[in-house]
Length: 203
Length: 203
DNA sequence: AATTCTATTTCGTCA
DNA sequence: TGACGAAGTAGAATT
Image 1 (tube, rainbow over the protein chains, first blue to last red):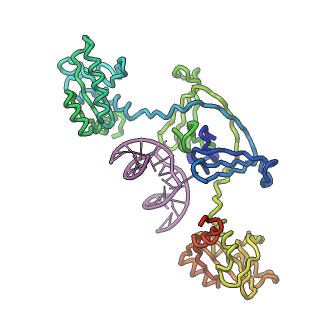
Image 2: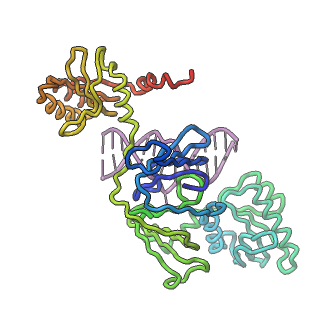
Image 3: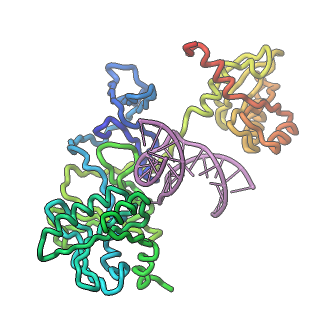
């Protein structure tokens, strides 16, 4: 039973799909043989009632092997690493994708308002801040703009150019970026991964 | 962890789908900080390796709240009740679906070689054995044939006719049934359920 | 918020 | 056993 009232009935094998279940939100009512007339051999009956619909899951428990409950606190949610992070790693490794003579300064360059995805140097030695997104939207351009304002106040770095790199850039974002003097680069993830994987391929 | 080596990582909410998992068959290797250099705060690392592919799921465990293991024996598998059982209950209640003057003797009439789904009496008082299937296949006809042979040896019941009832009957099964003098009846589950539900409907 | 589309899908059915 | 489609799909991306 999960904190939201959902209940999963699993077998001791097979896939991740339960034999049966009740989706949240739901409430559990436990009945003992003293309260309710249960089938012989049933020590407890669980009635899991969906809060939204009239669906209910009724579980007859014949034997209890173990019982324990733990408050796991607020669910931090699943953070999927691997897509944007991969893209960042690949671009850092293949920084010359952006142009000949580019060199990496560092990934995740921390600033007061957050980390810049990639900080690099172009062929002329000028600093370049790169914002990476899987899909390039206006939000990303705004974010990069804020970083650029901040970085350009640092005399050791200024002047800092911006590059907005994504697998796909929305027309609106492209217009906004150009308006602010930010270059746009469309990345070919498959090609980049191909270059990266070449050494581990069999043929 | 299930008996087949599969591992599910669940959050304390959300649906039945795990945050991450490894499908069976798989093997688990547990590493402690003494054996392997683990990140700070990680007390144990689980490596779940798929037996078929090179996929592996690596889990860093930061805190153990509880740990227990139970041998649940051979998985009896999921038996879905409600479809064939429902059909049997409905037909027993609406036995006249088979013809005017039919009456129920009993459901699940036990014999030495297994239970006959429904035993009834027709308008002429003759005994009728009914085999129910969702989809009528040759197997079902064979099964009913065996029951009929047995039942017809009982002088109190003989002669016993057979009816093969299903929502859908395969042409091959129909031919075989006719050849053995067994009648075929196609059942309309929705219509039968409609009749049954009429009293519990709001309008 | 509603809709469309993908999935380490899983699971059943049919050929 | 493999192909094909449905799922109480779930979950993400898009409108």
